[in-house]
Length: 76
Image 1 (cartoon, rainbow, N blue to C red):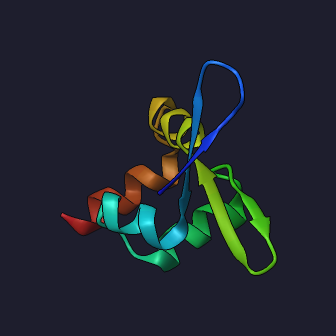
Image 2: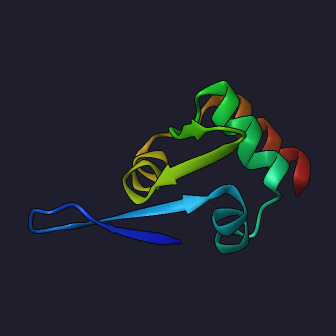
């Protein structure tokens, strides 16, 4: 995780795919799929994706999508 001083009164947390995958205990491939499909917001710089802490919070505050529910059911 990178922390960037925004110059104001806050700091911006930025994750790489690898860092966030480790924190969430999911595969890099899953995160890249979510980024490419727009389920998780991120920015691509060169060949690498970067995800803000705000985007992670936004993702987890959303209601689950129907296909995510069926994926969860298949895994149990």
